[in-house]
Image 1 (cartoon, rainbow, N blue to C red):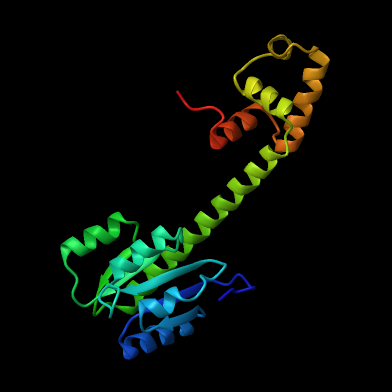
Image 2: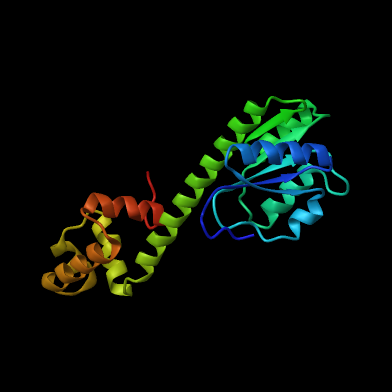
Length: 209
């Protein structure tokens, strides 16, 4: 289920064929891609789409219920935003689902616009999460490209040491430190020391006091 176009896709799990058809028709009318499943097992047997997506999940299903599916996905490291729908919701279920990160919990019958609003919120959350994850991966790739000495220099630079002080710490010349520092800034794509400090926080090289 890989969407090479990167278009958003909505997955629907509900054991009621009429509900599946109604939601699929609604999403199609809004220009959203949709794939439906009658059981959690059917959905879990498929690879998750590579692109912005969300899951509309009925709470009461044959076999695994909605909360079971939520736990299973979390355990597998699948970070897909979930919108729960149910005709038999209760406060305990709602609290448990929301605490585990659900976007919304809708009780049947719900208005079409309620579902569409929740789906748009879920898709936007997924886009933001994917974008942030991609930036973090790029940042780690840049850091991995540094030599061990360049990493030492970066750590001392973000700690506020001057080139002369860094040279003393590492037992090398100030000119060599300047060269390493230039390489660090270039490889990390940092325009200033302030940028480098922000990157260091994200990488966990330094921690905020």
